[in-house]
Amino acid sequence: MTMTIAEPIAEPDTEPAHRLRVPNGRECAEITWSPDDAVTVAEATQLFEQGLGRGFGAYKRVPGQPDETTRVFDPTATEIIMLPQLAGG
Amino acid sequence: MASALYQGFTIRQTWLDDIAVSTTLPRRPVVPSPATRPQSATQVLRDLLSPEDWQHYSTQGHIHVQGSRGGEYKLHRERQGNVWQVGNASRLGRPLCILLQSNTAPALGYPIELQLAAQVLLLRTDEQEFLDIALPA
Image (cartoon, rainbow over all chains, first blue to last red; front, side, top):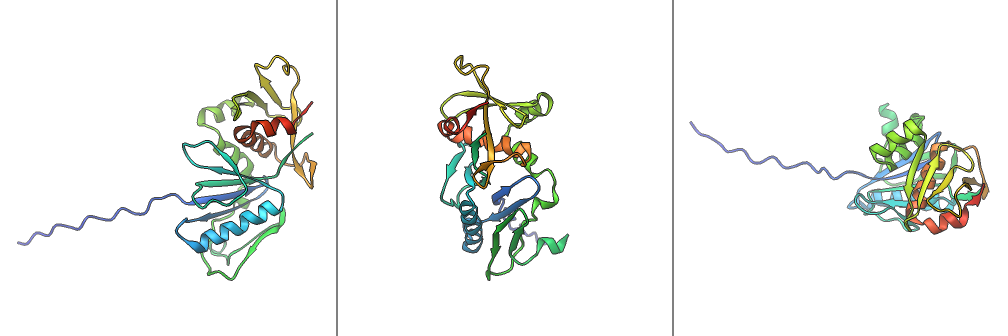
């Protein structure tokens, strides 16, 4: 009887998706990207820049770090939320 | 809906006509838009808060936020004049009004949770900017 030691099963890539959300309440544009995938980064960057062009503010979120405002798309951000600007009312 | 998951990469939202992404890049799955989730603004706010803070908001109707410069604020679930500075005697009793804007003017049509989310994020990231923008109610 021959025993074979199984190869260790590779851990799946569990890195959470990086996400850009542009909500307005009724609907929400949402896109994910992988920092290693230039195509998805380009897609997310395009949506990000269109949001800026619309006058939205962008907030970069990384777990364990304070939230930051940003004007530049950062592919390493875990999440970016874009919202309409605030005004005194 | 599978077809919604694998649409060609085109995002077109009626509320954001010019935030449209049309590209010749290869087709790939697109994250389903929460357009089918009516509470997307609520979900964004919830994601910004700790479970305890969300529970507090759900039951008490207000949020405590610490600004980036250390100020303490209480945000009520109200449209206007909903921001109160905590522990600032000079401003106590004088709420601040700061609203989401549309076409450079303050707008009242957004879901209140979206306004609260924007207030939370701006306080956390640039408290001074928040105070510069806000007006006494």
